[in-house]
Length: 107
Image: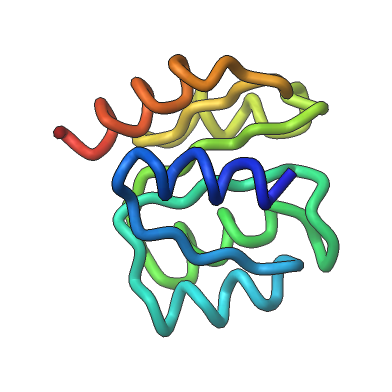
């Protein structure tokens, strides 16, 4: 699925970096400082929730986050209690995801 989103977002003009698990995602976050993060609650190494918690609580980052997951109920509380968070159930329509990204980036 990562390859699909990489191609979709690259074709839309976004620079995309991917990570195979939560630990690698945090390392990439430190190095890359993204404008937006797309996460899956079910990613290996602690899930997208781990990445989100570290980014928000430890680093104090307000970077926009989009969860695209088969288990939206696992992360819905993040969307309800934090700003700049959206949750979509797999498989979200391409147009819907791209529109959310554009809106969250203020483009």
